[in-house]
Amino acid sequence: MDIKLRLEQPEDYRKVEEVAREAFWNFYAPGCDEHYLLHIMRSSPNFVKGLDFVAVADRKIVGIVVFLKSFILTDDGCKYEVLSMGPIAVLPQYQRMGIGWMLIAHTRKIAAEMGYRAILLCGEPRYYSKVGFEAAEHFNIRTSEDKYFAALHVCPLYPDALAGVSGRYYEDVIYNTDSDKAKEFDKLFPRKERIEGTSSQKRFEEVLAMQKNYKSSSDK
Image 1 (spheres, rainbow, N blue to C red):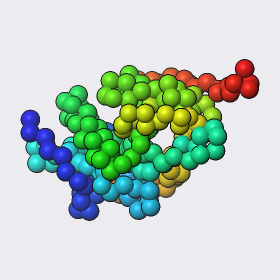
Image 2 (cartoon, rainbow, N blue to C red):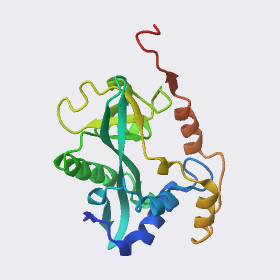
Image 3 (tube, helix red, strand yellow):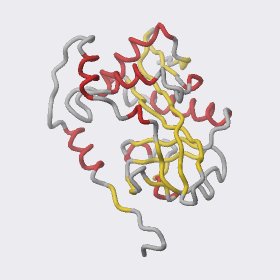
């Protein structure tokens, strides 16, 4: 299959939102918010347009990846800019074909050329540990709530990019979507059934529970 990657264009927006909706529908929760998140995040000042890529196959968009600027606040009070990756989505019928990996590898290379330090994301440990990411805990990087989280992953973009950069990771507040607004936005799309209790939702609950409190050397 011939797969091409290119920057997203304004005329792609609706189709890209449809891709995200299909990819995430009933995955983490009944329905999904990711298509609404994409819709609003493009106007964020932290949205990185140069890393907004789509994958095209069979003359249609089948995948998408986007990034926002975020930061790590270190334990000694310094602030370092990093990137948050996501949503990253591939149409269900095109999954397990390496398209997600292609999007990650392509944008990771460009992000490094743009001078960014590292990429962070929250996602399935079984997948992201295979595509160049490491557990954030290995770098002593925690969530903004100061917890180690198995889903939090890091990809340094050059040697020693995170040397001495340990602390709390803060992603853009736009990721905290308003569920009511997301449901209203979803009414602009064809109706889909919301299902509860899927295997992916159960796995998400398992991963969500994989958090533990951080203890500094002074607490030990």
